[in-house]
Amino acid sequence: MQTRDCDFSPMKETVKKELGDIHEKIDRVIETLDDEEHCLLKDFMQIRKAITHVSSLAASFYLQCYLSPFTDMIPELSIAVQRMSRRKHGALIAICRKESLDPWIQRGTPIGAAMTHSLIESIFYPGSPLHDGAVILKGNQIISAANILPLTQQTTTYTNLGTRHRAAIGLSEKTDALVIVVSEETGQTSFALGGRLYPVQLG
Image (tube, rainbow, N blue to C red):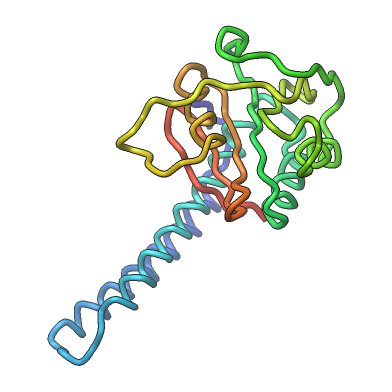
């Protein structure tokens, strides 16, 4: 995982502050443990939400670090993903890094065009002929669309995942590709790398 060119300082400062706030929340919960009239469930929910938030912030930073050596079009990709997330347009985007994806995918429709946010959004627009399957990106190019990716066989770590998420994890298990997935049910954006799925917060 290439992160050597990234400046970790801003991310670390943000994470330190967020973790400090979480620490204070936990301290307050501990102080109320002897109060039998105080319901802890709401406190636990807030702590869980705060931990998820700081985790997403860190994952978003690492996402850019993992991609920056392989494409100059991160802003275009980010705009596309943010807009699809807001609209709950499901998407599956595999970014080639060092390894070839050819042995592991069923090729779809060749595109061979420069990556732009509008082209990515149009591919995944509901009802588009190409919206099913994955887009393959390499460098600054959209190589193809409607590609079929291998599905993960993990049944214990990730449960109740849809086909897009299982495909994202599956390809990341077989190759060093980074795979971005947008849920059409929730709009949540995640990326898969090395067989793991990480929620991210873009924008």
